[in-house]
Length: 232
Image (cartoon, rainbow, N blue to C red; front, side, top):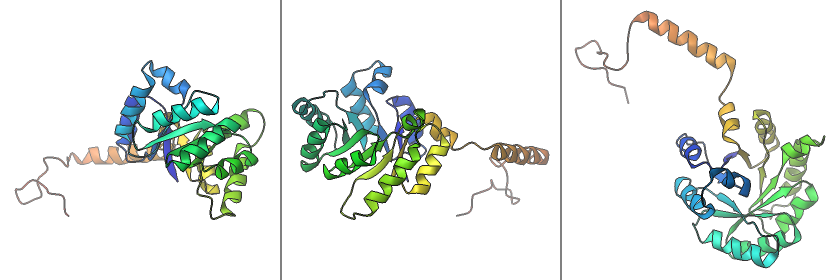
């Protein structure tokens, strides 16, 4: 499973990209607004940090303006993935942009039927919002299972299932078990995947035992009067 990070915070992106765990970025107008910076400037900077797809969302609602915005965004960098809403005008825009060779992320998907339409329009990614479905008493992961099953039945479909509105590590694990292609995670959720109380407890015990030896690895001699060298 690929991990995208759902943020427009450049400092967060730099920090997480250094881990080697980040395959792409998703943004939206709300996330960019939080930065207080110019939208196009932020997108260009993110594209320079992360070589994978960087989803940048159009803000228009009519096809003609969406298309113009999408083309402008796509011209910013080769890894821009234009994000459009799952509306009739959004799907028209998706079709044109995808035919032009631009990656498109169709967002705000809440049904398997919508996911079928996005695939037919040539979407590179479909973004079902699992957390928002959970919020209204539905099972977001059931939607992921349906889309994965449908897409698998048609080998010609190249659209990747991008699990969005992820609320915690459990969503990530369930999506991976179902075979989703991508999960886009808020930074806190990615960091939450590291956490387990037994990991912390085990590390604490190891460090306590090591401290009792009085040794250090750096500047330690190898027993022959030479600084210890790491073996190849």
